Image (cartoon, rainbow, N blue to C red; front, side, top):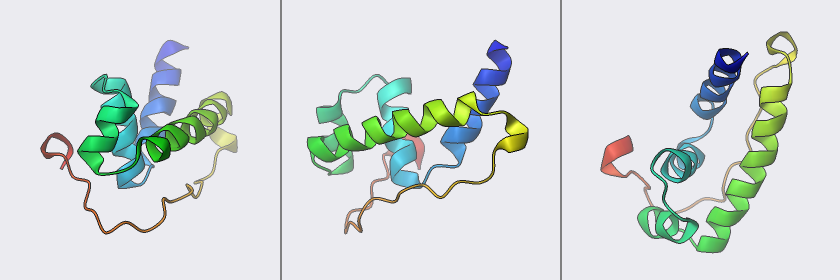
Length: 91
């Protein structure tokens, strides 16, 4: 069961847009705080906090559903930024 959850989590992260993927990886894989992520990606801490909250809700629903019932979801994109959030570790 744990490997199935890991597979679903990996699929969820891979299907995120670039900025959301960076937010998730920087927070959960690298252990950065919301303020640190905001500084790295040149976003506000409130925006990072909001995206993490939304992504947690979507992630729980994505992982809980059976794979056969899951279809590609359109993730809610962030409003257009003029920034290019590409930390060297994730480029």
